[in-house]
Amino acid sequence: MKVTTKLWIGLAILIILSPVGLILPEHFKAGSAWGEWGADEMQKLVGYIPQGLQKLASLWSAPIPDYAFKGWEEKGLPHLSIAYTISAIVGIGITVVVMILIGKALTKKNN
Image 1 (cartoon, rainbow, N blue to C red):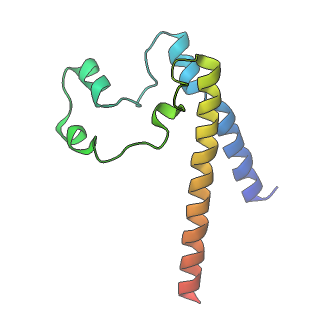
Image 2 (image 1 turned 90 degrees about the vertical axis):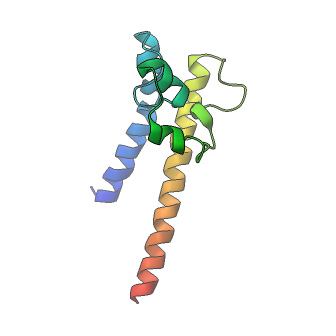
């Protein structure tokens, strides 16, 4: 099996498993997924907003906030799982396209 085939299989598995980040915290009543905290959640968790996070929080606005589409935030776990999977596919697709473009640009420079 080619290395690229193994890569695509691995990425497909990760896409399929992406809703686990929603399901486990929901199952264990743990709040949001670990490490996906915004400034407001950091304030609740540790009592303050780290200075660096506070400075950088306004710089980036996610194209699909909380991995859900507008109006889907309150529809429940099945809808959010679908949104998570779509977000994973879109994110991987964008990353692949960008990497291909960078690769083509670099190979043109070397020729």
